[in-house]
Length: 326
Image (cartoon, rainbow, N blue to C red; front, side, top):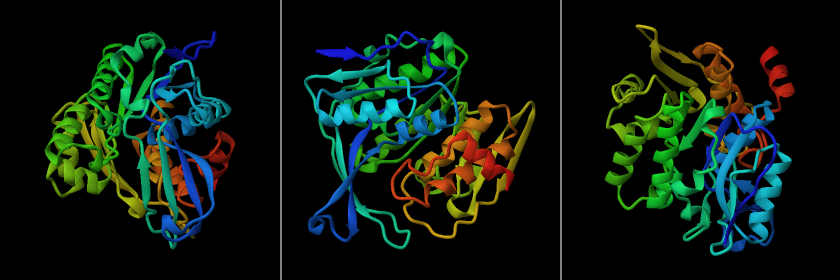
C-alpha cells in the first residue's frame, strides 16, 4: 500500500519532515474566483527549508507522505531536482496529495490562500513512518508547528523525531509556523507547540507568534519563556526590523538584535520566515557566531520576499557568498 523511496547513498545529515502541497499561483491579481490561469509551484514550510539548505550544499532528507497521483509525482520530481534525498518519502496509495491555491500578491501584501488538504496523504503521517531514519548519521533536525497540527498521528511523529534526534545528539530547531485554522482550539495549539518547543535547541518564532503562544509581549520575555523550558537559544523574527537573539553561551546569557536587510521591492512575503530559518540554521551548523547567523537569516529572508513563490528566492551557495561579500 505504501512504498518508501530508497537510495543506496549515505544517509542524510539534516532531516526535515511535514507536508508538501502542489500550489497553483494566480497569474493575475484579484479574487481567486475570477482568476482564469495559474502556474504550478511547490508549497510547504518544511520542504522550503529543506530546499534552501540543499541549495547551500547540505545533505538534506525530507520525510513525508504523498499520494500515488500526479501531484505527488510532481512533488517528488521537484524535490529530487533540488538535490533532496527522497529515501524517506512514502507513496500513499489510499490518500491524495494536498493542494492549495494562492492569490497573486499586490504591493507586498500577504496573499490569500485556499487549502485542499483535509485527509491528505501527509495527514496520515505516523511514528512508524520514521522506522528507516538513520539517527546515527543525523546532525540536525528541523521541525515546524504545522505537521503536528495535521493529525494526532502526525503529532506523535513530531514528538518521536524530536525526542529521538535529541537523544542521539543531533541539534533540533523548531519554527512554530502558526496555522490556527488547523487546530481544534487556541489552547490546544498553544499548549502543544510550547511543549514541542521544549524539545528543541533553537526556537524560531515570529514576534506575533511568540506573543500569541507565550502571552508575553517583549522579545526578551518571549525568549525567557522558552529558555526556561529547555531551549538553548531563541531567535525571534522581527520582520523588516530584523531579528532578536537570546541564548546561553556557556554560563553567560547573551542578547542582541540584528537589523534587517533593506528591500527595494517586496513581491511576496510568503516564505520569508523559511528563508530566515535557512540562513540562521545553516550558519549555526557551520559554526558561525549567533550574530553572523542572524545576519545571514535576515539576508536570506530578504531574498525570499523579492520573488513570486515560496522558495524561488532561496540562494545557492555561490549566490549567498556573493551577497555576503557586499
